[in-house]
Length: 141
Length: 70
Image (cartoon, rainbow over the protein chains, first blue to last red):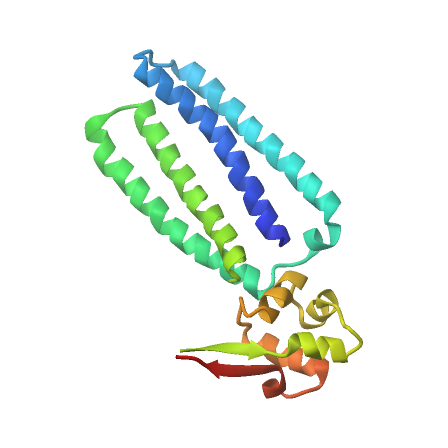
């Protein structure tokens, strides 16, 4: 498996774990009609980012140790093509999401609801990007 | 419709069983990219195609071909 595909799997996994926990907590609190405070949300978000960064650091170190030659290799034309394709699709997903949050949500919600929706759209765009990188390597280019 | 075919595996064998990694190093791509080219999953740029032909000291048409299919 190409090194950059491994990193995409790692990033996808770290993101799903971290933001899965975060959004589960936010949705459960919202369904129970117990809105979480600003400070609690901020602390939760900080913890989630710390979890994501920790997974990424450990994963990167593991892959670098296991395949040091692949880790040092520069991006070649196929890596660049896969990266550009995934980024361009993810850009449109992000734009669509942010426009939706920016235009629709001010009429429906306030404060953290808007912030969390924007964050969710960023996560979706990232999810699309990593998924397309993986798909690109699986498909060939 | 058609597809690009190649003789890279044969040419590697004829050149002292050159590894995919060695070939990749010589043309400036990763081992996985050479593997993807060999299996027809990835079509390289003209630049890389010429470099591959150059490594084996053959013409482009001796490395790559075009197979027409219906």
